[in-house]
Amino acid sequence: MKIKAVNNSTSDRNRYCGPAVISAVTGMVTGEAARLIRNVSGQKVVRGSYTRDVIRALALCNVGYRNSKFFGFNTKQRPTLAQWLKSSKDIRTSGRVFLIVAGHHFQLVEGRRYVCGRTKDIVSVRSKYVKRRCRVEEVYELCSEGRIKIPDAARKPKKEYNQLRPYINKMKKKYGFIVE
Image (tube, rainbow, N blue to C red; front, side, top):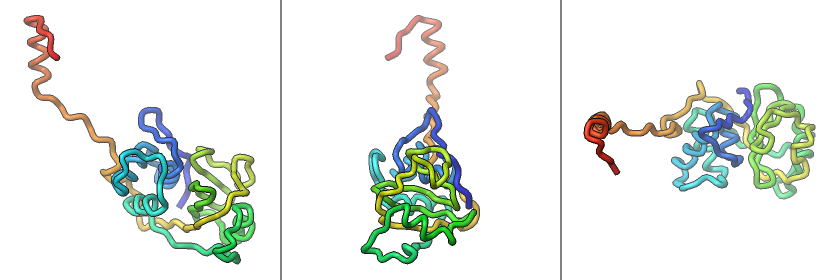
C-alpha cells in the first residue's frame, strides 16, 4: 500500500482530517470521503470523526487494519509522536502504512513519509509541519484486502433529470411564459 497526497478538488471538498486520511489512502476526493463517513456514522456534517467511523469507512474501501502496539511503550505512558517514530523506525518500511491518532488528529506514516489534513502533501517525518510533540493515542497498521475501491455511497448523487424541462422551455420560448 502507498499513501498519496490529499485529493482536495475545488468542487467537492472537506477540510477536516478524517476525510483527508481516507483520501490519502484511497485517492478519492475529500468530499467523497466525507460523504462516506456520513453514510457510516449517520452524521449530518463531518466536522470531526471518531476513529471507529474512519476505520469503518476504510473497510468499505477494502482497507483493513491491525491494531499495533506502541513498540516498547506502555499504553498508559502515551509516547509523543517523536518517541513513537524513533522507536518504530525499524518496522516502518516502504509499503507499510500506519494510521496514527495523536493530538486529536489523524495522520498517516509510511516509511519516512508523512501526510495529514494539515500538510495535504507528502512530507518527511522530520518536516516542521509535523506536530511531533503531541501524544499518541492509538496506532493502526492499514493493509489492503484486495484492490482498493471507491464505494457507490461515496459518489456524489447525480441530479435527477426533469422530463418536462424541454416542454417547459419550448412553451416559454413560444408563448413567453414565466415559470416559477
